[in-house]
Amino acid sequence: MSPITTPATLPSSSVPLWADSQRKTRFDTWFGGLISPFQLIAPSLRPASTDASFRRYLRVDTAAPSGAKSLIIMDAPPELEGSTMFVQLAQLMQKAGLTVPEILAWDEPNGFLLLTDLGPQTLLQAIDPNQAPPLNLYLDAIETLVQWQKASQEGVLPAYDRALLLGEMELFPQWYVAVHRKIQLNGAQRKTMDDAFARIVENNLSWPSVYVHRDFMPRNLMVNDASAVPGNGASASRLGVLDFQDAVFGPITYDIACLMRDAFLSWDEDFCLDVTIRYWEKARKAGLPVGSDFGEFYRGVEWMGLQRHLKVAGIFARLTLRDGKPQYLADTPRFIAYMRATCARYMELKPLLRLIESIEGIALPNAFAFGRI
View (tube, one colour):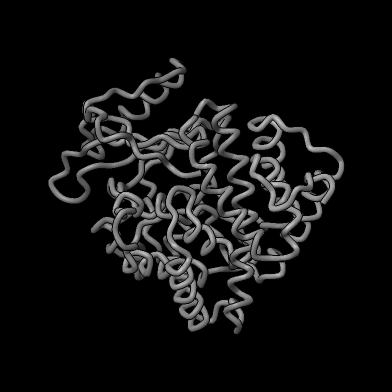
């Protein structure tokens, strides 16, 4: 999931804390060997962001007379978070012309990486939710997305298959319903959920597959002048891209659904529809398999978004209740609203809508209890 930017009140001289003294010793040895080659200013080492996973990021300034003023260190404990896929995907995305962190040094056994710094400002931070939505920034985002999808090749990334899609949605009853809401579904309710999940996955898999970032949203897109610097001779995208280590080969509807139905920011449907149409038109011109009927494509985006919202509601509950990160669960009402809006639009999803409203304690539109409908 997405990095959480460190609060602005954090002192720049803050020393990163280490829960494992042996890991700190291994880090100090590795970091010490980089100070001279990269002209690192060791006392400037500080937290850059935390993460929904077990990774964390540090920022360190450099004394180099030209080039980057700071670099990023990824701390990914190998027993919890492998870094191999991150490195492979960074190279794959660079070849596709995307702006991603460059791997400058990698201690593979210990999971320490030195990366180029794409800057401190995410697309989310560049947006004022109280102002009109910034169409130009979203156009940059869909340009980046189309560029990524055009590079797609089968057999390179893991398949976003039926088992994975269903397994992700299962986090909703497992963590959100049973652990967070403390509700045990009865047989009829469980069947309603299983039937809905099967329909959702069937719709998801009816769309052709491309490269899927899997968390393509404003919090993982960077706005910075460095974004204009091409990588490996390619024409680089205008926005930097982060948090791509879980990329897969799956439905083309996924990343645009992720972008426009964000975990931390909501826009009116008119704006979401406008940007999605612009993406669809650009994707068609690029030869991507989005179909010739926008209405059908938009339906696919909504059903794909529903799969993601069920998954993320479960993940956010797990992050709060298992991992002690309460800030995530505060955003689940946004996901419940997304689910209800989509389910209300399609007759096949009305039973799931009634079940979700029952779980949430929302009064049903008639006097019958869920079990009798």
